[in-house]
Length: 278
Image 1 (cartoon, rainbow, N blue to C red):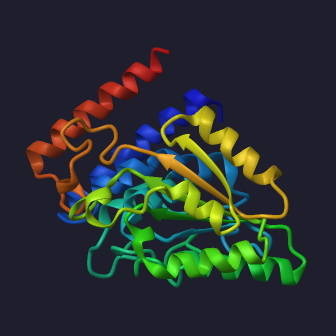
Image 2: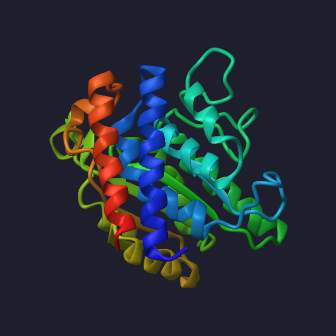
Image 3: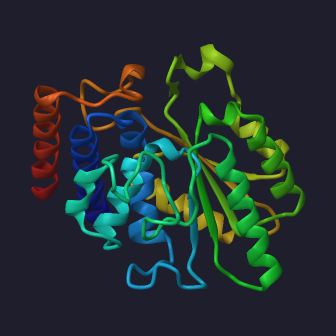
């Protein structure tokens, strides 16, 4: 996909995120919207995956360590063809395979169950080690929240990845600056994020996580980096694309009501129309 096509797809994924959370009457729209562009690029440009063969042995692996933003993950998987887009409306419903956090046993395309913050990156590191020991050339990607990196387990995994020089691992930090209780810098500041990962032996790239040209360049640089894992620090806007949700910590984990949903969808429809005129 070219940049414009990726922007259009990301807009569709944002609409799907809102529809999922609105239908469920619960969920996490803020972080899902901030991560939407990065996840769009992963599934429509970066990852070697095949919806017809979700378990193919040499596929690239993706672990959503910040598992509560499953609405963005599910939307990307559905639009990529892993399961019907219509099924997104069953998010969190009893009997649905699309639960509040990713479930590798029941959801096509999900490589690792996640949601207990800090643990996903450890699983991704294990996958990267497995690839190396097995002589496989698949790559492993994991996405963390910037509030999530307050968890100590993240740094244990980072220490191991750096010491083992896992250059088949790319870690993405969705740096939207907000967590459930407010500004990450006020609660338990992880800054400077870049210097911390550098200290653990990572090649660090800082980008605007909503700029597809920068996103592409970062992933290309990660693939070209040898002898060390890569951390992409993506500066994003929580609630990106919906005016009344942007940079509002209150939208971390609540669903829009009918009126708010209509307003948000109207904004995204207008954004899509503007992209079509480009």
